[in-house]
Image 1 (cartoon, rainbow, N blue to C red):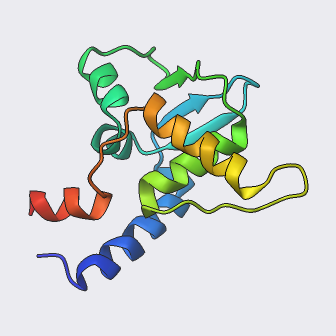
Image 2 (cartoon, one colour):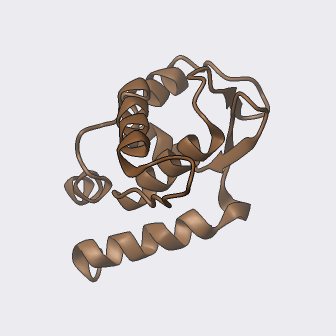
Length: 126
């Protein structure tokens, strides 16, 4: 039984997100920047990655290239969302909130995000 309910799950996932040494998969962005992530989180949250792993479509180095042509910071925001069920948007002088939000919504479609929250997915497995 998971203690502390939803808040406890988010706290645990936040800790997991911070543990770079336990991340076992890399997404290579169009600028060749690597973003590390836990393979299990990708499988749980993304229908695209779930299908990819079921078909074993990756090389032996446990990485995949992202062909969405999205900026590195957008992919990073999306990965943050997979763990936290919220975006960590930092507004800067070059982009406004609406543009960032639109880009993130587009990437949710591209990666075929599971519509259930990570918390609900975990609680339903218990």
